[in-house]
Image 1 (cartoon, rainbow, N blue to C red):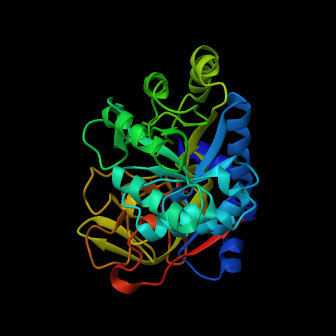
Image 2 (image 1 turned 180 degrees about the vertical axis):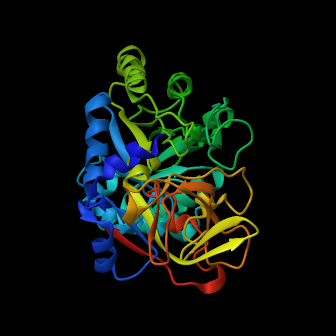
Amino acid sequence: MALRSTIAAFGQVDGQLAVGGIPLTRLTDQIGSTPFFAYDRALLTERMKLLRSTLPRRIKLSYAIKANPMPAVVQHLATLVDGFDVASVSEMRTALDTHMRPSNVSFAGPGKSEASIAQAVAAGVIIEMESATELSRVVQAGDRLGLRPRVAIRVNPDFEVRGSGMRMGGGSQQFGVDAEQVPSLIADLKAADVELLGFHVFAGSQNLNADLICLAQRRTVDLILGLARKSPPIRYLNLGGGFGIPYFDRDQPLELPAVAANLAQLLETAIEPNLSDARVVIELGRFIVGECGVYVTRVIDRKESRGRQYLVVDGGLHHQLAASGNFGQVIRRNYPIAVGNRICAPANEAVTVVGCLCTPLDLLADDVSLPKAEVGDLIVLFQAGAYGFTASPTAFLGHPAPVEALV
């Protein structure tokens, strides 16, 4: 992925990166401090327009709030998406604090407590059950509240998806009910006072290979058609998502038109003839918000150590864990990075950008070429709209939390 095209998506004003049309130094003055995350409202809207114009019209788009649960982002997306997927009571409250109807909110994730299930039943959201234990808790909550719970079964498929950054289906998983166990769970549901709406299959995330995503969708539909023969009429079919975004130089953007063509064929040949009443959902998080955000941190020191030049900034892995390499658990590569207030200057210095934490793992960029940056300059990490602030160890070493802004 070319840094130039990433910068172009946000735009430039007076030789600076612009976010939401605002030059970076002015935006920093308005926010009042660094580090901060800034999300571009116009880019969010454009991404949704791209999805709407490319995917089949029958496909409903659900936003996975875990990617970025900032209330202002969720409020904005509530006007653009068809539903929300939540993974906690806190996320459910954020979703329900918008105009979105509870019937278009789904609650997934393993380990749902009795209290969280009761709140979901009371709210009227779709509970995507991940085990027989959760079914029992759903039934008990419905009886206690005098309400008929609305449920779907999250299915752990009997296939895996290659190319996903994180595998969430196939083999042994904490996610969902193994496909071969689903018929037994459906039989138990028939004796319970619950409303079974359908199924959810999410096989993997952060996949940039359109062919592999298409294959997963075809196998998912085949699986659901088999399960549907033993269930009540299907009114909800969540095909998952897993659409990836490019983070590194060698990454190529997902070929969205190829995915759309595959979905159109599945709708025509398999879903509409067999599941004509089903609400067909694609659930996306990172693909919607990931490329719409930046993380901005200020240079607070320059130092040289045995021939290597370091820029020390006031942010770090406590805000951007993924960019640092997830505590050393993966082979790290540099996220797109720039000196935001010198965006047009030539990259003429090799530097290593580190944070302010007392650990060598606090590494934001290793041996990258940047314009010469001085103390006070603003370093920008791109692809920061998803799994940034809330996916990072913000309490580590007790530094202040970053500000978030939707502009």
